[in-house]
Image 1 (tube, rainbow, N blue to C red):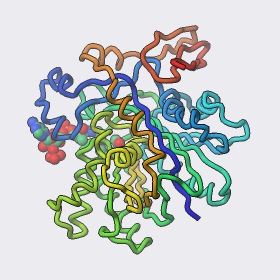
Image 2 (cartoon, rainbow, N blue to C red; image 1 turned 180 degrees about the vertical axis):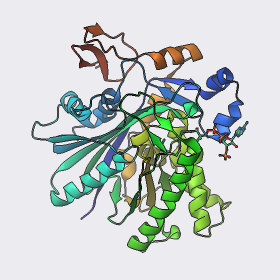
Image 3 (cartoon, helix red, strand yellow; image 1 turned 135 degrees about the vertical axis):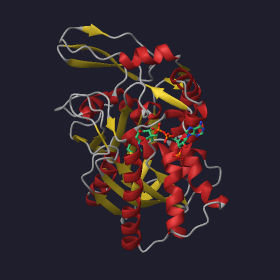
Image 4 (tube, rainbow, N blue to C red; image 1 turned 180 degrees about the horizontal axis):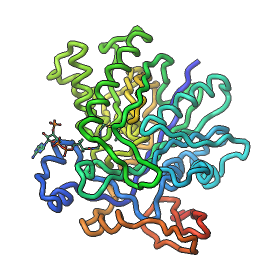
Length: 390
Ligand code: CAA
């Protein structure tokens, strides 16, 4: 039985800062950001966006297309959650008017938990082929102002419908996965910005890629040549390019080979404009690949490397379905990215320094540009969400 991703929809903030603007302020060569880390624009969440609104906005087109009626499992993955107890997915469940007979839970393991949710959802549908699961991965990547990681912030969400006979990508059942206790990136409960040992995190990412890849090859009996396209976790696009070069080299593939370079580049387009979306990043990459590759990808095998600091990695694969083009939300994504508003440096810093009041008072938040849902206020420590623009 084929099980996999039936629909996928992305959402990111309406606001961004061009990394040239940031480079000027930090007095670094813009080429360090544009070329050295491979990022051009960084999505900045408005004060009335959080992971709930990002996730609900990503899934809204699926609701409008009446794709969510049979969903009875909602897995919400994030590492920028808004509550230590209540799952962000429960707010989303209400906003999307999902059936009450639905299991809803939040998952966490840094950037890996979107993939954990996808794999759990695939197993769930395998046991219940007439059911569907909604996987939402949503995050806001935040580091200290002025730190080396600052230019690798971003925000966004991916909403994926998992079903039998998927119309986009069938997920294959062999993978290679790996866990090790390392401190490369973490965020203690008392901080709203992540801590990271940047260069070390890059080394760990590369090492875990190799561990997962070797186990994947052993389990699947597949080789590099059997994979047509690659989607990596994308903290910044240069990282995915480096990862691809590593896989090429370890498979004795000529890294200058143009065909193989193409195997990764379309997957990086959206991330270059959105920045790191942690749990959603690899699925932003998949969507970018499907939306932007001119060639028909039907029957192509995609290799995925998912990495979550701390750390867990997984290499797995999927095969693109015939006729997938009809089920993409590529026009929405193009329009969303085209119509965003740039921030100047001061606006970026003001938004960065804004935080939701924590005194239990009754506050209504100014309305910024969001798509369908926004965080409209907080009262007695309870977040209030509302629908907009309908
Ligand atoms: N023109 C062109 N390129 C330039 C340049 C210039 N003027 N100046 C520097 N560069 C290049 C450098 O040569 C370097 O390229 P290489 O890596 O190919 O050598 C690149 O720009 C970056 O320069 P630095 O190494 O000096 O950058 P840095 O130390 O200031 O910061 C970083 C880089 C450590 C990755 C930092 O951005 C960071 O800490 N980011 C967050 C952590 C992260 O994303 N880690 C990834 C793995 S962990 C993970 O994936 C989980 C996750 O989502 C966080």
